[in-house]
Amino acid sequence: MALAMAGVGLALRDGGQTLLEREAERLAALLEAGRAQSRASGMPVRWHAVPGGFRFEGLPVGQLPAQWLDTGTLVRGPSSLLLGPEPLIGPQQVLLGHADHPERALRVTTDGLRPFAVEASP
Image (cartoon, rainbow, N blue to C red; front, side):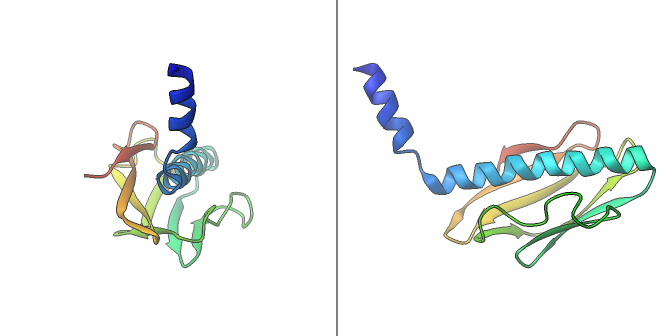
């Protein structure tokens, strides 16, 4: 019975929250990739949110993805990050939300030393 309830719980999980979590985890990984490439090349790399997606300035076009997985994903607040080339970049964060679920948000954040991570937004 417990296994059946666990299966139902997973099947009924909120798709909007799952989608936002996927977007945030993907963004954290992409920011870390941009940060690593910036440090390896010694060139500054900036991440910017743009309508319909985002871009990495300082990297060749097409080297990293530039679109959200879902068109409803949006950035709230500041939408620009400096990813390097210095090993310490200072605290930075991006607040992600979704057009269909304005009450939900997740932060993709770093203290400047540790990798970008996803946190619940208060």
